[in-house]
Length: 339
Image (tube, rainbow, N blue to C red; front, top):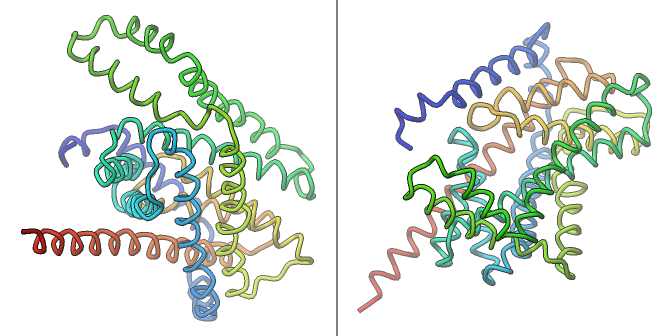
């Protein structure tokens, strides 16, 4: 897709509009001088010392989980999966339309000589798993904590649950009855030119090959284990670090964890929305929406969300660029060493 065609894509403009609205919500009635004061008192040693290793751990755990999703296609090295995951995060931070999902499929396919369409099937399955995890995480927090007396949040999440479950059901259908799905897809594509129909059929078959992880077996345990580790531990630590950095106090450890997990769930839902590259605006508004519910002042919530987002964006973008740089240098050395 060329730069001009991307600018003409209505999804790009929708993402920019959502970003502007989200940024307005995050900064509405906020005293920016107080936000600056919170920045000045932040303990960056604590924030960076915990957050940066945690984000790298997230990338590594995602690579380990992805390995169980891609094993039915081909056994791929953990290092290649880590590099592709890091490059995908970087691409999501700098390109619109969540291009990182396509980029990492292409990157892994190129490095491991595997069809990208099959790998992309595992990426879609991974996104569905993460969506279900986010919704279940939020429902779990709301079930064991107070503060949702009206039940509005719980009802909203319950409405989202079938939205996340429908794609999983379709993927499961494609995995269990691929010929049936391909036949139906070919029937629906009959108005299209023959060349496009044939290419679509081929890509759908390749996509179905990437869903082998749904066949069952012990690897499902590891997919679940890594998913819990990603969301309940590794992704939570940066939020806890931000609380410690800004001296945000809670009545108990349980309340602090509940606030961390609820903030994480809100961020997970927010970044799934169309937005500008890097999730600016939606990330900050999600933090404010949740943290105000826990009695945190808007200025503190905005400062905390801004610090969280900055460390997230810089760490993962830099990691992706380092991977590309190191791989490029390694490729040049191998070429120069070859006879």
